[in-house]
Image (tube, one colour):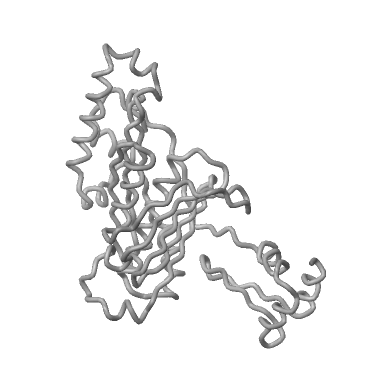
Length: 296
């Protein structure tokens, strides 16, 4: 979505994919507060990954000192989405029932990165988690590092029955020189400024409940929220619950481990590797492990 080149935005709707991911991660924690936090992470991953130009995998990851010490959201260029959470159950049990997501996270860092295949590229950004939650940290990154005015709203709701819903909306003001033609097409640069101010004001009227419950199409929702004749809406991209793990990839990781260390990992004549994201298991017997050891 764009308006005269002065801003772009993204609307995300997650239903089936969210339910699949949260359902598997319930093996780690059945606490609905943890599920809500992971759902927010996945919506934020989809929002931020959708505005970046990349080929590969965009990742969002938190590392913090709270009961939820690690959150990971991945999204590929093709729209495959996956997530993982690590929980200190003992610490979680000490928190009051009304503890919010910021309390669950605590303090630490939020990092964004892009991977091309299996090759990790340098982090695009790292920002402090200051104890006030995911969205404030992401907004701090855009304000301080990217120096882009950004508005974010995320709403999630649900349970294992009847299911989860996640919605997210992002508006971002583009630099004045990002589209000179947009300014030339207006009477002056002030009209571009007015467009952002109006869009910002409209965004401020939107609440989480309205974002969650709107029953129309995404285009209808955006046109009602932003009643501007020069609103241009691009095509949609489906997001799917899909993990990137495979037996071949796991075998590649095991092949990098020294033969003696592999032997120490064997239990009942085999090694079982469980993907933390999708919970799929991969078994390797001693003969297969011996073949991997020969690759060193």
